[in-house]
Length: 135
Ligand SMILES: [Fe+2]
Ligand SMILES: [Fe+2]
Image (tube, rainbow, N blue to C red; front, top):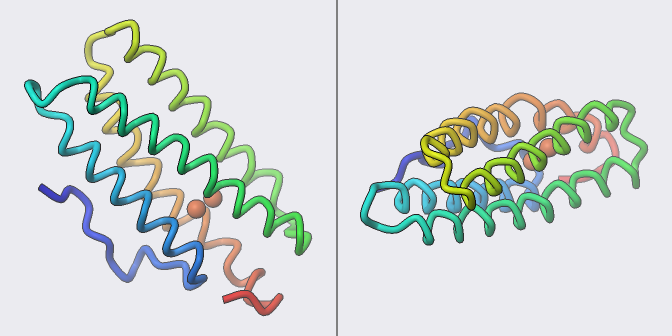
């Protein structure tokens, strides 16, 4: 079952970034499918690790664009990226030690953070990139 359907409101309007965000949402949906008890914690951990890896790649793309074009608000945006990776690392660790509630907590965190970050924080850099001719 799909948990989060990609929709126009989530588009930032930079093609490469939108494609990467879509991939993140796909991974998020995969994670949702792996959540019910019985399907297997292993699958959940595997998708979570994949999501983290892809997010690191995606954040790198954004941060390279900030650096390349001299985005003034880069520092605060990069802090948000760092926070996310640290949080996911912590959840992966908790997951490995079989702490209860980690699956739910992980899912809720990702749902709030990912969509919020895409819709609010990422959209803030778009006018800047557009002014540099990126689309
Ligand atoms: Fe992003
Ligand atoms: Fe971002």
